[in-house]
Image (cartoon, rainbow, N blue to C red; front, side, top):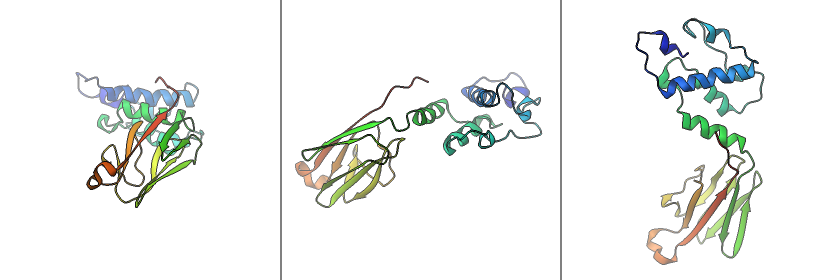
Length: 189
């Protein structure tokens, strides 16, 4: 049980309690059924803090380590929401398995290998989209470029379905509208 259940009663069950259980379960999986001593205290973590998942002996991405560590935050308000946990784990399970198809200027660009990129120019308005294995992002942008009507910024992550617009509103019908279609295998978490 999370540390909040050792205080005054009645305890309030929230999704934060579930996230604490996710962190404890992750440690059970890593240590073959044994929890770190800090999680066995009554209440948990009353005198020590659990070790970081960076010390688990597994080679985990830094954002997964930070996420799992946060699930065991003694303060329930400091634990990540379930959606964030799901989305982060999903992103890593699908590493290198996404695909983006872009039809522009008579050419078809398929980004499906880590490091692939596509440069879409329209005069002074240009965007470069790159696949880093976890998702598709803006690697470079010049001029007036929009993603779903929001100005594009370097390091933006493209949503699963979007339209890239090259050129500002003053160009009217001369603007270039480029649909970006993304697909990836399903993961049920």
